[in-house]
Structure formats: C-alpha cells, structure tokens
Image (tube, rainbow, N blue to C red; front, side, top):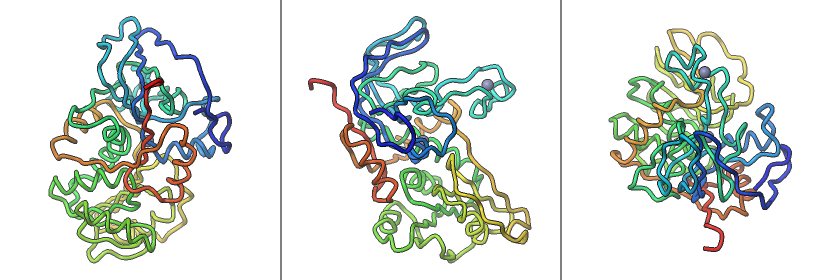
Length: 328
Ligand SMILES: [Zn+2]
Ligand SMILES: [Zn+2]
C-alpha cells in the first residue's frame, strides 16, 4: 500500500521485491501494527517524507534474504522498529542517545516500511521477537510498547501515574506499570465508556474523561493523545515535582498557561524515538510481565480503513495489518 502524497488515500500497488543491500535483510512481512505516527505522516504533519512511501514501522516478519554482512539466519523471525538507521558517530550516538542522532532515518517515513508483503531493513536495528507472541500480537510491542516504555522510564519512579489517551501505547504500558507496582489513572475521551472499561480491565484503579480531575494528585502523567491542550490539563493534576511526558511525535499547539502550573519543580518533557537498548530491554520485559496485547486485525488492502478507524478513536488496543504470504 503506497502513499503517493500526504492527504491522499494509500494506493494498492504491485512493486518488485526489494533487494537487501549490504548489512540488510529482507523479510516476508507477517504483521505490521499501525501507529498514530503513521497517521501524522499520512496527513502531512511530519515534514519531507520519502515519496512515494510505504508506511509502517511495527513490522514482524521472517527473513527470506540476507545481504552481505548482515549476520542473520534466513528463516528467523525479527521485528523492524521506527529507528531504521543512525550514523553511529554524531555526539548523540556517541553518548548513548542514538534516538536523537543528527542523521537518523526512520522506518515508514524516510525508509519504506511494512504496509507491504516484503520489507528490507538494516539488520543492526532489528530485534529478536519474543517467542511467546504470535506475529500479530508482537507487532504492537515494536512502537506502541517500546516508545511507551521509554515514556514510562522518563516518568521516573512515579507511584501515581496518569495516562492520557488510552490507545495502543497506554494499553501496553498500563500493564507494565501495574506489574512494577505503580498505581494507574486512565483518562479517555469524554463519554468513551468502552475505553474506560478497557482501561479498568488492564488495572487502572480510576478512569475518567481527560478534563476530569483525578481523585489524587499524580506523580507523573504520560500524554499519548496528540492534543496540546492536555498539557496544562495534566499539569493541573500533577503533584509538586511531578513530570508530564509527551509521548507522541506530533501534537497540536500547547495553549498558554499560568506559570503557577509549572511552579514547584513540575516539568514538561517529550520523548523522541527509541534506542536499540530500549528495544532490547522492553522485548525482554514484555513476556515476563507478561504484557498481553489486544489487537484488531485488518487485511493489508484495508489499510486506509484501519487508519480512519484509528483517527476516529474506534480501535480497542492496537490496529494491526495481518499480511498473508502471496499464494497462501
Ligand atoms: Zn548519530
Ligand atoms: Zn510509532
């Protein structure tokens, strides 16, 4: 499914199989989860995507061709995440912050991704997929899980954790947070009683609409919804010294707010991308919790519909493209 230009529906196309270059592998894609970021690229909210482009950066597939020096066994099942390439030598890469690499390239944005039957990737940035998960259920771990995990880490040792927007990321991270012994407060769109019930079933002790004040102040809040107006709302719900973590790559403008909301050492910060270490850590942790992912599968040809369902907030857990091998 090809994006010719932002704002136009994806087009179903027959493309030649991509050939892996040096250090790369090609996979037969089995599943590719859909991320809010895909929608931002699709809508033209992120600058200068590769065009035409294959979206998708939560890819699980089986290696069927190995480029020189890639060092991966054919037949192994791997995950391909958002971080597709870094230069390895800028000041960020050399200080353990490859997520901020000056020249990073991202899957499904500057590199073709996984809304396809085949994809190539630099083997150094791929992950082993935990065996306990089917490809369909593993796919959302690769960004919703991973970036959510990084956001959770940046929330520090917060005991009372607020999650604003209970989508794919929050549904994974709520489980990890509970397992770590934290208390979870979930905020959804107003009137989304199904979403609130879902959050409760995953361990949230309190659920409410995003404008509501929680029964206690929060030590940290993670905002997954791309809504800048939630920043002052979350600050208002925050205990002294607490942090608001913005987990998305794009957000509408943050309205101005009185300084007193930030006073007393409250902080607002963002989370950008992932490091390979985040991925290794999280993918080892997920089966230990164990994180259970809730997925709504769509055939590849229905990628447009899946994106629109995500936009409308009508996905429970994560939307995942389930991709059958041609002829099977
Ligand atoms: Zn770098
Ligand atoms: Zn993502």
